[in-house]
Length: 236
Image 1: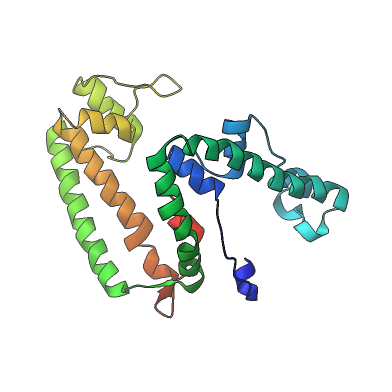
Image 2: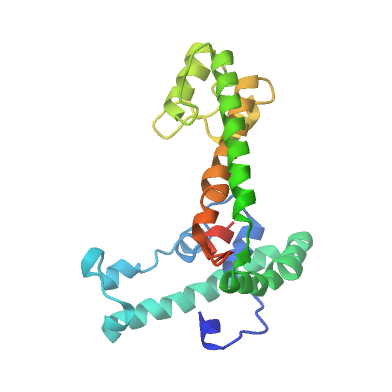
């Protein structure tokens, strides 16, 4: 944010979100509020609590000082406490700590420059890749229908549950909070070791995600052949 005004931060040493990612990449979300709950058992003041929500939501400069101060001070306090907690864990593991200090933290400034500058992309190439992926998705869909013996929505967890566990009798490895057999990626990866349909579904999901998130959407974000690489794209 300050780089927009010609201020360049130097000597960045720590980043709690990166530290959390290196410590346990699959442990959950890495935003401050989630980390505060996970590591400090602390529930942070939400912006909506002080600013309201919807059309009547205030901007930060409209919030009274006695409400804005605790919110802002909590950000600084929780960030420091998270650093102390997570960094202590990383220091116990030399390999993880080196990844964090020597790779991840130095990349912060690199990613920042990419986000501000954008990246050059080839919209024609991405369009061609989208068409190739679409053709492969059609092939996978037809193969899935053949294996299952019927047509179904490959993106529907409910229909996958019916095909996998009711019709084909695959083993139930995990259940959802509601008690239904899970078809999440972890389950599919394990089932794919022994059964062809889960393996096919994994490839289908990966390609569908690639197409919808990148090859289809990036060309629509072009501004003079350059895409603003904002945080939600680079976020791990």
